[in-house]
Image (cartoon, rainbow, N blue to C red; front, side, top):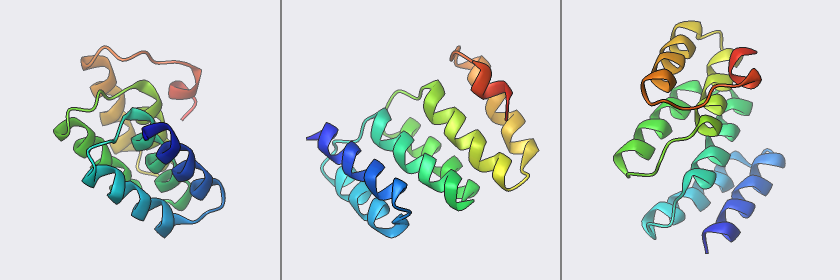
Length: 111
């Protein structure tokens, strides 16, 4: 189920098992089981590995898949942008959060 996949993806992320997490995520998407928690876990892994482009792509995939984007996913993507000094992309995400009326918090503004 989705909770189990999210937990497994998060465990891979914590263990820095980037490829395993991505493979699990591919399975989740093939089964149409992805939710915001799954996406946020993979986006967080992208942030840890400095893969800001993939983090932003995943936000787009979330949107295309009609998975409701939340502030956790956006904050994780902003973290990826921060890691690689992509401040223009982070500002764009901040504007997008505002347009979507997503809650911004201390994490959002500490990027």
